[in-house]
Amino acid sequence: MDEFEYDDVACPFCGHSPIHFQECGYCDEGYIDPADEDPINFAEGEELELCWECRGQGHVRWCPKCDKDIWDDQVVWEQTDSAGCP
Image 1 (cartoon, rainbow, N blue to C red):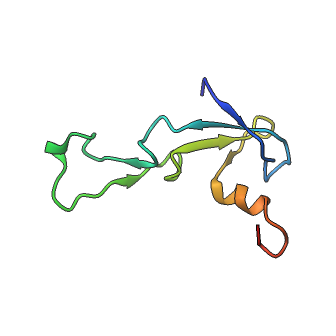
Image 2: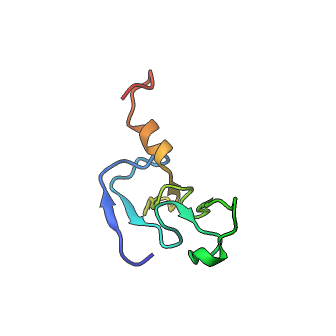
Image 3: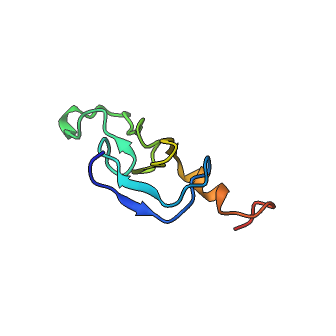
C-alpha cells in the first residue's frame, strides 16, 4: 500500500495512534462485480459480492505498529464506553 492517510483513532489491539487509512484498491465502494463491471456479462439474478479485502467497507485501515488490519466495527467498539454507547 503506497499512498495512505492518517486516521486519528487508536488501534484497538495495541493502542497506537494514528492508524493508516486508504481506499480499497480491489473494489468499488465495498462490492465486486463478478462480471468485471461489463453489463453484458452480468447474468440475471447475479448479485454483487462483498469485497474480500475490505469486507465491504470500501476502505482499509491498518496499524503501522502492530501491522494488524482494523475493521470499522473494531474502531467503533474502541471509541464507545463500557456500556457500548457512543
